[in-house]
Image (cartoon, rainbow, N blue to C red; front, side, top):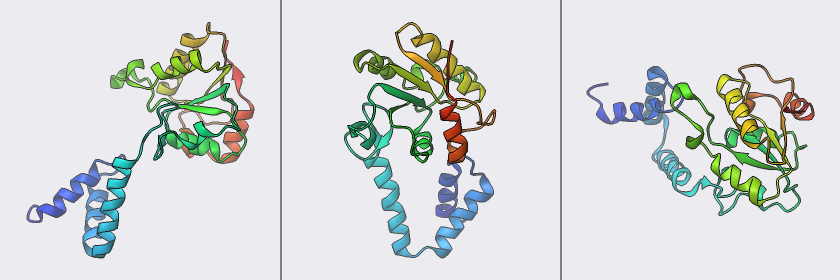
Length: 200
């Protein structure tokens, strides 16, 4: 591909996607060049630009949104005193599919991972402290994954907020150790929410 610089550049761009290696990136690049019409390419480019420039983090909860404030934060029928803390927006979508949780969310946009150089200041924890103080939060449900970084984050949050007059619970059994919430089926996730346990 050295003699096809635009194709090589496109493949390099696809390689930046999580989980995409050289072969897959090259296949994507060839597919676009060989199979996409000019209209398809323009639509693809517009979609990328729209996502980059129109989607931002909700100033309240941190979830991705294309509005000033996300739909969930603006929903007055939700319980404003209950927050479920998740890693990212994909986890919000997974929980929403259960149609059973009616509180609000706080999206960390990451997890504490000392091995990767990610500490509490690198994720959305400062705004969580402000919300707990300003919004009269009564229950905090920690729904981070059962991975080392998810457990580290859960322990840190429990230690940070346990003396703030907030009931802190952790989603319960049913989720596989080492698994991410976004990949769990709705029934398993529903059972995990129902089996949440107070953290001592």
